[in-house]
Image (cartoon, rainbow, N blue to C red):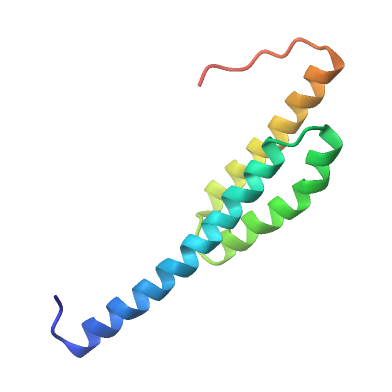
Amino acid sequence: MATLKSSLKDIKRNRKRQVINMSIKSRVKTMVSKVTTAQTVEEARALLPKAFSAIDKAASKGVLHRNTAARKKSYLVRSINTMEKRLQGEVVSTPPA
């Protein structure tokens, strides 16, 4: 355990930030999940701005790296487009992961 007063303050501050960061990450995961599990394309498109907002806020606060945020947003748009194409009956090839 740290003995210096400044170290104890650092630990306390880090724990507070950890709780806040976990909350922000959880909000992002929830919004991504809601968009990807939406029943209809219209529902998914309606949820998209809220998801983008949550991702952008996380990136601006430094919880997510900006490239990670861009990747998540791209994934959401691709998943909606794929869902739309499948509903239209088009054959969609998914690239290997």
